[in-house]
Image 1 (spheres, one colour):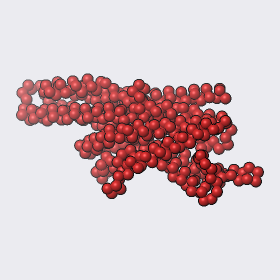
Image 2 (cartoon, one colour; image 1 turned 60 degrees about the vertical axis):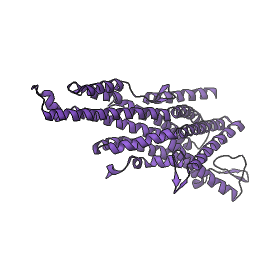
Image 3 (cartoon, helix red, strand yellow; image 1 turned 135 degrees about the vertical axis):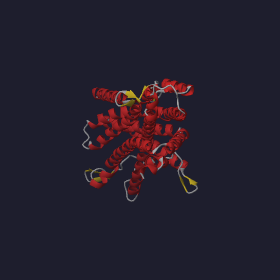
Image 4 (spheres, one colour; image 1 turned 45 degrees about the horizontal axis):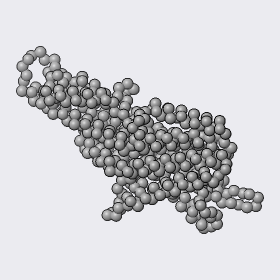
Length: 405
């Protein structure tokens, strides 16, 4: 039953997030909501970022300035990230459509292989979603529930504060309650947009990793069939009609593997085009956001718990950029997946096949030796090693800020 669902149904949570953010087509009946949702998502992201910029320019307190700087970096970074993904929506839709087409061509066992990779992507999505939910709760929900965040007593004057500052002040009912609810809805919309644009890259990369694994399995299985082994070990020179038909079938199957491999390699290039600039923005903003929030966290603010979720959120964003490309590169800690395809083709008994199959084998071996790498901005290779370097850079910048203080 599980294998009967389509690929779109497997990643329906990610697709819903993209539709809600206006990245891909969303409609109610015949009414298209895509443009409205995209303008809303971009407008709220930009407004929140500008709000932090205003706080940064108006304050003369170092800790408040660092908090505003951290959130401003995150806000503008995610706004730019959204713009870059939205700009590539046509290519993104083509990639998703190709994945859906390939899903329909897979055998049941191959679907199980691919599903294991998609499940990892879904786990990342749910974990990132939980971190966003915790951050939203600590910033706009907990103060109301526990009654200790937005009421400030100064002598006999009680001042009600909104979660996020506005150009104008409104502390009287019912204006205050209306603005507070609107801010909660705004933050939830922004959080959904964050999750949608930050997790679609990992979903695409882990899915294409699963297809690489399937190609490797197909090529390996072609060379390990019982009929092929019998033919390799047969010392009789005469070839029966059955063996001829078997090798004709083998040649067609191998040609199909070559075409499948070429399709997946094109998908890798398309995913690189969709994600490489967005990943570069994410690397830079997450790194410096960790440093600035860390500086605020070690300050004199009594409510430090909410900053923990912000740091974890930035770390998860860095991890989302680097771990899926690392999965695409590596297999069983040693071999690269693209190289594993070349190894599988080489150890297959291609020398017993027709000239066309030999040429196809040569092509797939040569192309398979070129490791598939995904980059940030076309010059930073994404991997767990890059993740460690960026965390180290964040700590170095944090140390610099502390020394300046």
